Image 1 (cartoon, helix red, strand yellow):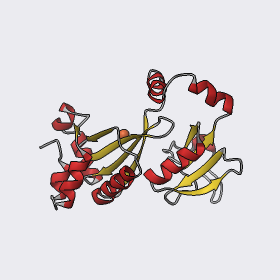
Image 2: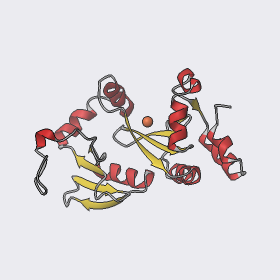
Image 3: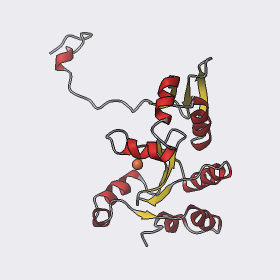
Length: 202
Ligand SMILES: [Fe+2]
């Protein structure tokens, strides 16, 4: 028994999961390009920008900074250019262990598809679109070649867990590709959301 007001000794505290995932920090060869890209694709707002343009902080929710972009020294940018084209650099990075992608969720199929259309008008298009079952996902490459998933949930979390324990998911844990323009057309034509959610799984 501990006296009222006395703290539990740290060695006696039970382990608890971390409270939250706080932020992501990206290293960029062009901070301005990365900043503009994320402000467009996740509709983030800027909370800080370094005077020398070598870094900025963005957020889109209650967190003061969810995404930091830090610039690289010019010598590192030059060395990276020496590794080849944009896609050659990505291939080299993918041949090593590291972060695969980061994922952001839009709250609803409509706003998620509207964001796709907005980005497409700006020349930003996904490289891959997959219906994973519990989520519809579009995968983009940011200006530094990082893979970014923009998704929307298609079922409540309890149903998503149930789906992930199902035979259908065991048989196909990757999902089914879809055409985003076709999905936009179906959405605008009034196709029920449950049909849109099962795209490729019918
Ligand atoms: Fe993902």
